[in-house]
Image 1 (tube, one colour):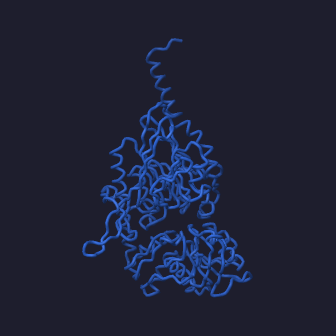
Image 2 (image 1 turned 135 degrees about the vertical axis):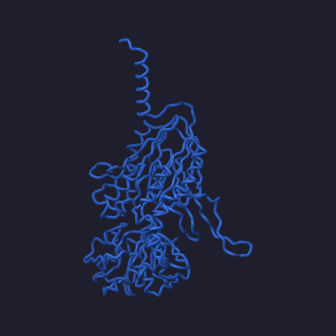
Image 3 (image 1 turned 180 degrees about the horizontal axis):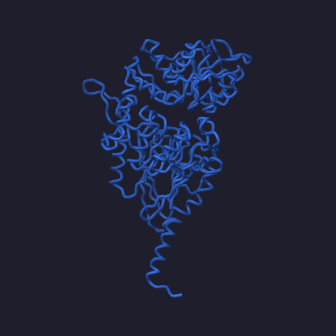
Length: 527
């Protein structure tokens, strides 16, 4: 059959288009360059905020300006986020992350992988957030009834001039124990390495390089977190990670694959230049750029001043104009001053040891239930549920919402002494993790960090009696078995006060006369 020239032209165009859709663009011997910008663990910080020791740091308006400058200077730019953009400051929490998603849309993020805190809200809110997003949500290893989560993609493929890039999304499987049990019910969390090894060979056939955008955590163990992907999944060129809020100065190399992470809260943005030829990486240059991060210094007269770690970044006025009204609405409600802190209640080590902020938070829980004429033996709090430092000076309600951002109520749980012992045995394995214990003043516990065991446990000065029942003040998240503390599911009595944990903390500060001083009193000893 003879084909005319016009038909052949159309046929050729169709075949070329099909080829572009089905596989990588093959330009043998040509080195390509891709600039990758990335963030992780944004945690509801849409506008510039106070982070000890300075205010006006981070924020999406400044991040937008930074991204625009990089795009202006480079032809091929990919902007990604490695998850946990939910749960943080009140201007985000009050509006279920709406301002953050607006900001991400305006910046033009290419994709966001899901983090465990995307399950801090119910299914309906999650679907509303996805619908609001101009960028795709990624997660390949979490399924419901054997299917990917509704409106969530396992991966995407981005096409540039001369090459294609596949971005695979993965979430830590630990979410099945650390996620809110009410909201992860019915979900299956599959092994991250297994899923990646199933998908990456297929993605390598469709794209020139594969980037794993994961929310798994960066740890000193190749059997845990994102290191598992780099060590066990051939074909991945780069791993962009989140979850552990890790600060690094250079990529972590595992099996020749770079892993990067950008601290948290949008205070930094990772900036990497990936060069590759014939599907193989030829170089990767990476840096961590501060977004208006400041430090404390002194001027020539000895007065305290704040300086930028790098140059100040101007705020994108269009983005700021969209986001500021959310903060203004919150300020109207939460600007009330409730007290004064004599010094800083640092949160830096609440996942590692007893801290003054952990002490006062747990004391407030026990106090609140006792005001309701309940007999409480002790309070127990997961360190990861405390999210911010309480600065010295005036305390606004808003600050308390930053410290305790989760919508958790205070509950009473009754456990047998046997289960209380099991509770602290579990806590001994969590030093350094979000599940690290903070306890009220009635507890004296000694953990051995090396053996991950309890060496001594006293409640009101007495050893725990396995046959006795103990009433414990906890947040509703822990009461339902959150953070791996499924021992709470053995509770013989349960009462949910329905009062938010942060509101009880506010009342406790007022009860103390508004004047608080950071002290620790030896509740937790770590050997």
